[in-house]
Length: 125
Image (cartoon, rainbow, N blue to C red; front, side):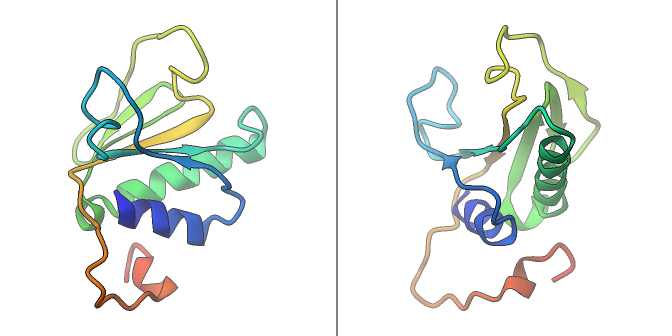
């Protein structure tokens, strides 16, 4: 989760807000297993494309980051497998139109021995 948030914040400078821990009836956010990447101007073509890029980048790094699923614009993308549509939960936020939700198996805590290179975070790196 931490690695995903750091990589996205570096590679997508237009992102200014990434939410993480919060109370929720589902396990993802309360256990630090999910982030919400807030998309600026999410109704615009540019905002939708930015969200598409971030969702795609997370899925391209699913194995590396331990991504379990991504939700964006009411579509559910498992880390491995076929995408599906989610139910209509009644609002743009609940339906993930204003943010990309990325759930992982956790981890990514710094150990103090890291070396960070932007190239090391690319899907092919």
